[in-house]
Image (tube, rainbow, N blue to C red):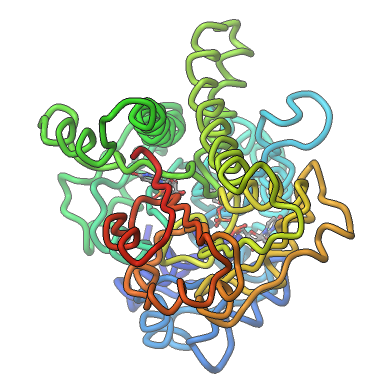
Length: 463
Ligand code: UDX
Ligand code: UDX
C-alpha cells in the first residue's frame, strides 16, 4: 500500500503533536488533522504559531515548518476520512459520568461515533489506527461497526498507543523508548502492521518498533500508565512516613533510585499525580479486572488512586492546620495550576482539588501559572463533582505574575514545579506577605534552608 494521505480525528494533546511530527518526518505524505471543535481547528490555524492551542516545547516550530505544506487542520471530517489511506482515532475517552461503570469505565461514545463516521464515508480500503487509550478489546467494537457497512470496503484495525508525556511530547515523539503496534494475526493484519512500521521507521530505530497482537497492545498502554502512577503513589506513601520520622524523602528517593533494579525515574514525591491519563487508565484497569471477577486485582490497582487522593487531601489539610486551623478570608497564593511543568494542560491537576478544599474552608485564592489563564481555572473548578458554589468561586482570582499573586498572602503553595518558581526573588515575596509567612512546597523544588533563613515557615512534602 502506497500511503499518500493520513487523517487524524482529534486535534488534542495527542493527535496534534503526533501528526505534526509524522508530517515533519514524512514530507510526501499529506497529513490532515480534523476535529469537531471548530474553535480548536481555528486556533491550530492561527497565523501566529505561538498561539496554537497546545503548548509543548518545540511544537510551534514544527507546525510552522509543515503547516500548509503537508500538515493541515480542518473541520471537514468527511472529506479528510474519505481521501485517507490511514485514519488515526485520537479523540478523548473520558471516564463515564452516567449509567453502568459510572466513575470507572471509559466512555466510548466518541470512539463509536468515529467508527460510524468512518464506515459511512469510506469508499476505499483503509487502515484504522486506535491512538486513544482504550479499554482492552475496543478494537473489536470498532471492527464490528466497520465490518457491517456492507459496501465492500475493507478495514484493518491497528492499536498504536501513544506513550508521549505532556511537556516533553516533541522529544518523546522524536525519540521514543519504543513504538508499539498491535494488529490482527492474519496476513492482511500483518500487512497493515508493516505499513505503519514503515512510517515510524523513517525516524525510529527498527528494533524499537514492537509489534504484537491487538489486545497486548491495548493492555500494555493501560499497564504502563498504571505502573508509572504506582511509583508516584509509592513514593508519596513513603513521603508521609518521612514526615513522621526523621527521614528525608529526597534522600530516600535518591538512595533507592540508585538501585539499578529500581531506577531513578518517577520517584519524585509530590502533592499527587494529575493529567488526563493516570487516573482514567487505572480506573479502567480496575473496571476491566472487576468485570472479569478479579476482585483482588481490582483492589490492588485501586489503592494507587486512593493513595493519590489521600496525598492531595493531606496537603490541603496541612495548610489549614498550619494556619492555626482557619483559612477563612485568608489569601492563599497558588504558584502553578497545570498538572506538571511545561504544559498548559490542567486536567486532573492536584491544584484543582487543593483549591476546592480551601475554598470550602472560605479561603481566598490567587493563582499564577505561566501558561494557564483564568478562564481555564474557573472552568476546572466548575467541573468538580462537589462544584464549589458561586460565592466560593468568587473567592478565586488569577494574577499576572508570582509577585502579585503572593502579595499580602498568608501562605504560598507551590503546586506545579515550573522552573521559574525556583529562581524567584523570594526575599521580595517574603517582604510583601502577611506574617508569619507560610510556604508549602507541594513539589519539593525549593531550598528549604535558604527560605527559612529569609524568614518563611516552610513545609516541604516528605521532610
Ligand atoms: C485523549 C485522551 O485523554 C487519551 O487517553 C487518549 O490516549 C487520546 O485522546 P488528548 O489528545 O489529550 O487525549 O485529548 P484532547 O486534548 O481532549 O483531544 C481530543 C480531541 O478530540 C478534542 O479536541 C475533541 O474536540 C476531539 N473530538 C472528540 C472529536 O473531534 N470528535 C469526537 O467525536 C470527540
Ligand atoms: C503519562 C505517561 O507518562 C505517558 O507515557 C502516557 O502516554 C500519558 O500519561 P503525562 O500524563 O503527560 O504522561 O505526564 P507524566 O509525566 O507521566 O506525569 C503524570 C503526573 O505524575 C504529573 O502530575 C506529575 O507531576 C506526576 N509525577 C510524575 C510525580 O508526582 N512524580 C514523579 O516522579 C513523576
